[in-house]
Length: 200
Length: 200
DNA sequence: CTAAATTCTTATCTTAAGTTAACGTTTTCA
DNA sequence: TGAAAACGTTAACTTAAGATAAGAATTTAG
Picture 1 (cartoon, rainbow over the protein chains, first blue to last red):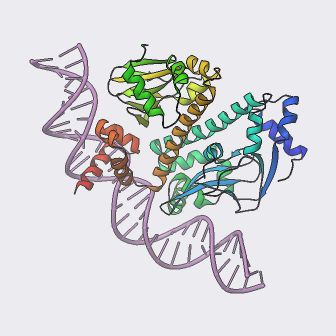
Picture 2: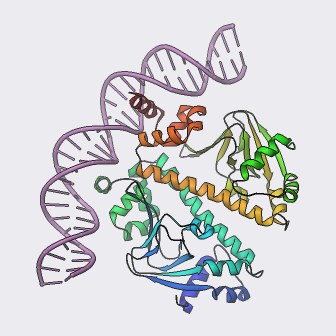
């Protein structure tokens, strides 16, 4: 758990400005609550059974969210640079989470621990913005899931893949194909066929 | 916008006790913020473009959540008695929502208006529990979507239907089949075949 | 550096979902 | 109440995804 360097702090500040802007006074307090976690390839940010003890923000690298049902893996999400990473429900409730969140590349994650989060919520100077920040993270996940359900209902696997080619460049370029296939809800064999088909 | 009768109040209090319990003093304040909305069959709780101005709780009847993408309807959810009903994101953000929420039977909906919600959040006596209540509603939706995505990835349409037969009795019994088919992500024709197949 | 593991592609075969159309039944509402 | 609309089933045909297996290419690790 290291402190952040100034480059990392600037990166974070710029990116979250879309959601919440902090003035100088607030920012000085906020950064005291941040730390950094480094993950090697294949290391886990959280594993099932653990309580997710922090909200993360990917400074560099990438992670995959997945869980296992009936022996089958389900890839729910990928996070890259400047995206959040958290098992949101476990973080909020303190219940053990059911997902794996695994680094697929060596990754540097900015983290806000549960304790730091609560301290900020109890600090009148930050409470409002932190609450808003938390809500926006929740919405971020909710919308993502809503779109995903819609894609399964309205689109064929091929259409889903074509859409990912447009909107998911990072996923296409940096994730192994069998994870992409699983994310799309198809087999790797089928994805391979789709790729062949659309290249004609 | 009528007030609630005592039967309706009891029903609500019993059901939400799973999430949050209110003591007498809190309850007396709370109920001043509740009202009732009656929907005839096919009337809308919200429509796309509108801002969702209240969180609802189905006292009786049923509703269907759906939206239209590329001319195709997507059934996201059904709510029956004792379930929440809200376009959560629109309610929180004040942005227009994209979904239809339509009564499929004559329905009675308990509503908490945005204004009432904010008044309660500003009332120290209720703030904590209302905040918790709000978070639980959000989680309720999040978990529902997570499970739904998982079902599309790990299960065949037939398996999804069999699961619905077990866990979605209300949906099976009270919803027209073509809505169920759409909810499962298949065509009505295909659902008809599945039904025939599994009856053998 | 090499053996093992992982990843991707290709082929074959089976199976089931999509599409369209037709038909009978039920529901709606003017 | 009677015509129109909506709903569910069935059939015929097309299409593509799943399962399995085999082989090539790449990556990983001892």
